[in-house]
Amino acid sequence: MDTRGMGARPARSAAPGPRADGVVTALPVKRGRTDRVAVFIDGSRAFDLANVVAEQADLRVGSRLSADAQQRLLELDAPNRARDRALRLLALRDRSCREMSERLRSAGYDATVVSDTIAWLRDLDYLNDSRFAAAFLSAKAKSGWARRRIAAELALKGVERRLIDEALEDEKETGEGGAEAMEALLSLVRRRFGKDLQNDPDAAERRLAGFLGRRGYDWDTIRSVLCTLSAEAAAENGLTPP
Image (spheres, rainbow, N blue to C red):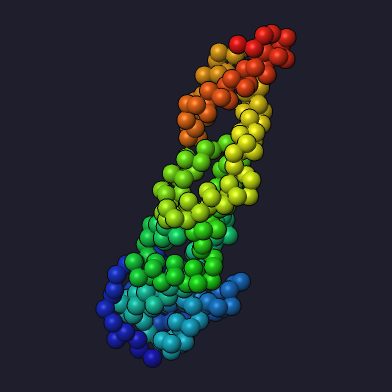
């Protein structure tokens, strides 16, 4: 079969470029991926395709492929490659819909492929901004981030304000905010600055204030933490708290 009439070269997608016109010499199943085949042209491996794409194009050993036909096959396979890339990214960590969209766009996939991939992931619940916001909030709160810093970062990641507010409200209702959050923060800074506050209080307080400020805490909270830790350090040294 000669597939040179499969169409003109469409927009760029994330894939190897086409070779010069040639003949398909082998179509082995890709190692570790029974859903994909490797396409060899004139004896050398050119690119991979999803089985369904190869079957729909009636691709066989002996088929002659022009450069334009190769590009068309790669474009038809773009949604499959985008899904594969997205799943590999999610295997590393959860992501917001915007983060995933940006990663796919930066990989060269066009807007339609990106949009369809995001919809597919959301339908499978592999992408869920509500779940992402809750997990991000929990992880960053344990790292000492203030709620307003967390909210700002979630907004930058494209999470809707409504979902951010819901995550913050759920945190309050589960008892992870308020006094417990302050105690967790104090525990964190004690581990990081406890010894320094005893050995060089002035320098330690400056570094601690910067540490908390970078995590989004306002001055009232920073001052409260400093007062608490200064009092603890003074008590341990047998001094009267300032």
